[in-house]
Amino acid sequence: MANYTSTADTANSKDVVEVLNDLLETSRDGEYGFRACAEEVDTPQLKEVFQNRSADCAKAAGELVQLIRRFGGSPDDGGTVTGAMHRGWVHVKGSVGANSALSMLEECERGEDAAVARYRKALKADLPADVRAVIQQQSEGAKRNHDQIKQLRDQMRTK
Image (cartoon, rainbow, N blue to C red; front, side, top):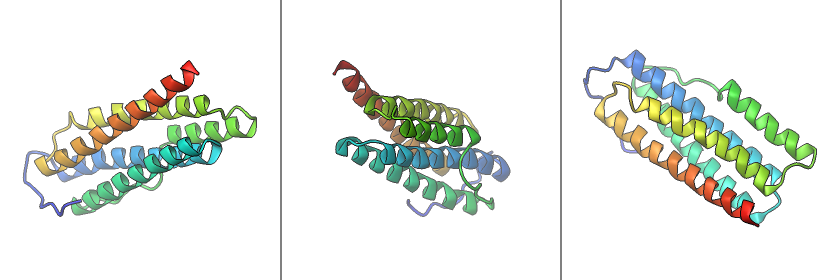
């Protein structure tokens, strides 16, 4: 991430940190969720897709941590409760043999639906231009993740 300087837009630092921490939790949910799916699938292609998406989410989380600290905030630990339940469900499916590629893709798509919605909400907030640019870029990445997972899911359904 580029080294941005703070702008004095109308956003106040506390509000910016709140938005960024919400997205940090979302990014960590994606990182952990994709990693959980990678652990449960047998297909090398899907394992690689999930591992790559997990790494992308980890990179986004790192960018958000830097921004949170720049605005004087403390990065939240971990992801959301919903994300933890989602990952638990992935592992339960894996342990009972319901970890088909289609099942894992469906779970990932649900997670990406939530991520896209949270980014959409964040982009409605009053944010400095440089922060908005980072969030917009990450939002586009979440949308690409969603679309890739949906496409793979659709392909799996037609098999």
